[in-house]
Image: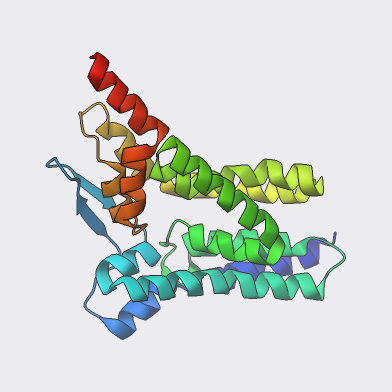
Length: 245
């Protein structure tokens, strides 16, 4: 692989990733909206869940569901398009992996927005649509089924990120793809750490939001969370403890 071509592919990905779609849409739809911060009261407590992710979630929260969906789609597209273009331009080497990885970096630390961006779920999906859509589909299904059976929205939503690491190895036997997915996980979980720390601190405080409430916050649908609260393994264990306690 050429260092110059790798640099060029990464630069293209970073510049496209730095386009802050949520900010552009907010300026168009509601210039007065401050999408740089979300404060959400945790049900059943006086605690506030706070995130400063400038993302599709912020657009949904401040502008409405349809603008949040549009932001997510465009965040995928801004990484999908350059990654696919680089893959078609240089099919002989995985330069497109650098494009996709730096598209995520640009989204999280955008050059055009003082390096303050989102977390990167949509850009990762966009990159994977150009890299391995089958892997994205298979791991998403596996993640969804596991999340429903276990009974946790966060497993449902995020397990595919981790599953893609062994998927790339066993399916492609390609260390560049594995490294790419490891990098995506490191970046994503690092940027998500403020939210994850807040969530982890709820347990010792006795705060335990239901899966329905968590699903509502993440705009994944109350019925899905309600299903987990009633019929999952965790729900069954919880009912068993109440009977024996």
